[in-house]
Amino acid sequence: MAARDAFSGYHPAVCFLYFVLVLGMTMLVMHPVTLAVSLGCAVLYSAMLGGRKAIRFQLRVVLPMVLLAAVLNPAFNHAGVTVLAYLPTGNPLTLESILYGLAAAVMLAAAMSWFSCYTAVMTSDKFVYLFGRVIPALSLVLSMTLRFVPRFASQMRVVREAQSCIGRRTEGGSVLRRIRNAAAVLSIMVTWALENAISTADSMKSRGYGLPGRTSFAIYRLDGRDRAALAWLCACGFYLLCGGLAGGLDWHYVPSLGGAAVTPMTVSFQLAALALCLTPVAVDAAENRRWRRTRENSKGEINGV
Image (tube, rainbow, N blue to C red):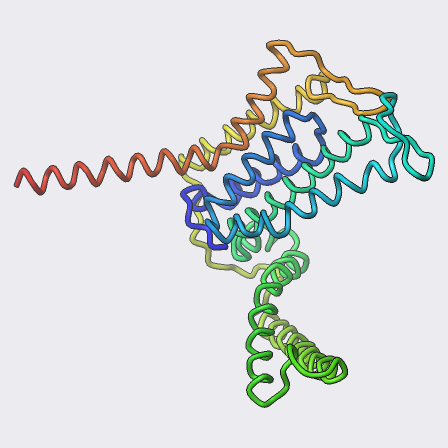
């Protein structure tokens, strides 16, 4: 998934703070409205970044996991006061356990969608830029890990095609033959991964990575636009933190459903969560409007000439 939206062009600190806030809100707040807002905005932003590929990921990976989590929770969690039926094992099936499983599934889906957006926006160079001087070893390991997964998948396709050309297909033939061919592909991939890791480590060591006083080139500069975005994100995060501490985002599923009452204050907390999650979408929409206006003005000046 290749990020080409306007929000990806902001300073890495802005992008990182945004994902910290939305992921923290998603995993710490179990209010159904907040979870719905987080999931909807995550799916929308993921579709903006990846298009049809992101939608296929939502349907093939996220949706089955959501359904599985929603179905499994009532089978093991029987807390709640509203008994709907009794399972063959004699345990009660409660409305609260079903709704809690659905909420947990929505939280899982939203977190996965936000992480897919994170990997598209926060590239390895941005992460190393932010944490290369503070935690050089850990930042290098994390950036290599995030970069390793897509490279490993791409290299595996190349190796499988090469092995198929010499008659070592993993799709046809007997089970024993397929296992033997798959083991050969796995052995090649393990060797490739170890050699790649050693060469990368030697390259970084020869360049003095992590040594005191080492300088590095960076194209990122914190300008006025980035400062305004940081102020906006900090304001939204602080307001949501106050709402959480004041109980305005509380919600419990067991033993009975309940939470913060619907008041203008609690509604404002949900609107703040919506505004926070929609920040990249709003930035991209404003950038598109500005671009269309510039094009129209340019065409008008050309026609006038």
